[in-house]
Amino acid sequence: MYPQQIHQYVRRFFIENSCHILRENEHFIHVQLTIEMDKKIMNRPFYWKYLESTGDEPNPAQLTLITDKNKLTESIVGEVVHYGSPRLNQLFSVTKELGSFVQMYEKPPVTQVPVQTILTPWVGVNYKITYSSDRTREILYSLGINLMTGMIIKEFQESISRLELESTISANTFHLPYTIKPQRALERLDAVIENQIKLDDHTWAEEARVRQQRDIRVLDYFYEGIENKPETYESEKKAIKEQYETKIRIEIINGGLFYLKSI
Image (cartoon, rainbow, N blue to C red):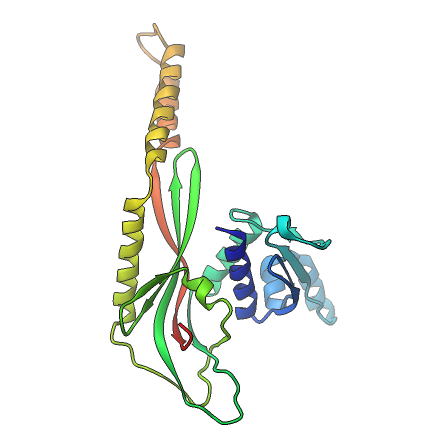
């Protein structure tokens, strides 16, 4: 996941959760948290318990996240986030907790003369693929499918990140009915992800198998010459096999039904 993708995800996360962006550029974002979001991500339960007991006015925190430290041209004090960092994983978890599926409408530009705007339905899904053995590699894919034509595009999240979206449809705006049911669209996107896995380089699995065999040979060396091997031998051998067991996991981080004009 590139810094630009992380920034777009973080930005969309806070906007969707009603957190006001106080200042930002392409490499950092400074936000005012809501009370709800402060409680979810700032880990200060005693502060909120104290306020509830005293009735004092709440003061939710502000948060600065740096999404690309290497490209900052000014001195910013904040928390560096990258793929795999605890803070980003926390935002992923909160997204799942709050509901991973949304329905959004693109807001048309304001014009002096009212103009009718027609929106097209899309399903967008952000997937995470995890390749794991004794080592782990995670990849994000963002896919979108047009529910009228069936056209599928990659980097869907990036495509909508700069659009102004809202949870209700604007006046003089209409959306077309979809011809592909969202459930069927999701099945098509799942098939794209499964095919992507087939096309990926899987030498990592063979390399894990080689490391597993190496560790088992070392284990056998220490127990060489012992005819009746103790239980510890079998338990250690089992642990080695479990450590290097190769797994592929597909997760949906979030997704939604989007009615759009600009794609």
